Amino acid sequence: MKRMGKLLILSKYIFLIFSSDILEDRKHIHVSFAHKGYKTTCKFWLEPVIEIDENKQGDFSKKELIEIEKLIIEHKEILLGQLELFFEMKPVKAIRL
Image 1 (tube, rainbow, N blue to C red):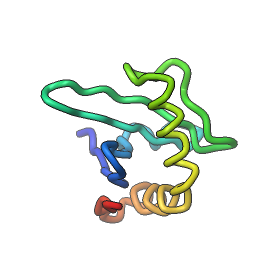
Image 2 (tube, helix red, strand yellow; image 1 turned 135 degrees about the vertical axis):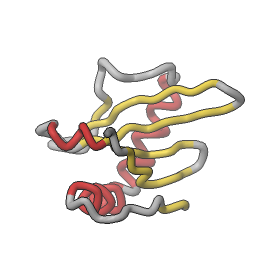
Image 3 (cartoon, rainbow, N blue to C red; image 1 turned 135 degrees about the horizontal axis):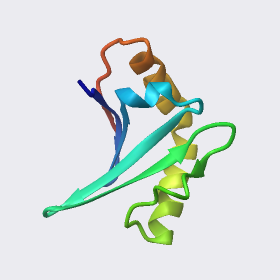
């Protein structure tokens, strides 16, 4: 069964991780936005540097991707701490800021 963890809720975005992501070498997060039946998701690598996964940009505009990247940079330590809990199979409660 695929497990999903909401890590952080900021502005209109939800930052999350999937259990299958544990198998990937580089730490990353998915960022989702949903409004009135419309939903899109993108993926950002957190290491070695923060960068968008060029193959998974969703339907976000360039402006939105820049905004998301700034949020990730600003809250990177919180996101990494939440990821550690998730990977250690500990309960993760989404932080709303």
